[in-house]
Length: 154
Image (cartoon, rainbow, N blue to C red):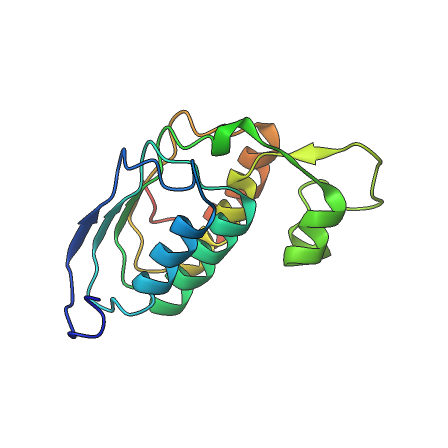
């Protein structure tokens, strides 16, 4: 692939490619590729289907590479899927739980919560587009916590 050839992209637009719609492996392959892209500045993944685990992976990679200045995840609702608290806590730990405290049976959260928790640690980031991505009041809470840490995001 491109990573084996040593290709370093400055911009990558994979919008409207239906990543994650037919298979969950596509978004993970994108994250794996992004881990090799230390010069990437602009990333557009809008109009796809990134779910909880894929958004966690994406966030972790973007923190590790810390080079992306603009990310677009607009219209990326994760097919409307929500996950329960225990899945979220197993994946990221209690510190990222949007409400804190005790786990309530049946409580769910949008996939984008898994991603926005990382925004405060991607210091290169300046622009984020999450329009129509299934964000909720819980997402806003997690996003606000990230923005307190990294307030240069537009």
